[in-house]
Image (cartoon, rainbow over the protein chains, first blue to last red):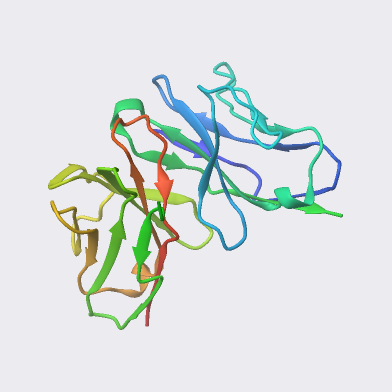
Length: 109
Length: 114
């Protein structure tokens, strides 16, 4: 069965510290992986997708097919990074996204 | 472009009533997705529609739930005879076409069943 697992409900770090939000997936084919972010009182928005290999707001994520992981990383967290982060998987042609339960990132001053 | 619009933002229904949730996709987008988020859970896919067609409804409960995306007007998610377990946030997303396109999300409708 296709599944996305985000093991941490809450991650709290201090400003300037490195941050890593974990995401593991279960899928037999070639998945498309995404990270979505929801800032307070805002709608869900795409942060990055693995095929673009971009760095957005200092965040990067590498798809590791051997470990079936797509962890989100940032070397120096900022207070404005505090938000809910959702990892999601797309099954290619079927379009719909499978989401993890989300990790709430809290960056303290 | 105002983005994906959903209304109402909050909806309160008594058990047994009907709930109608509306979603207007972004201009130029012909693909609509509905997701449901229960408390403490991630978003769960419900249904994927194109204009006048249901493409994938594998995530829809078998009874009481239906969705449409007519040629004109918004997409509608309809829940008949609501029960307390239907209380959740319902999100709509749209994309321009191809399945690998980015999905743009609306602000959600929070349904409370009393």
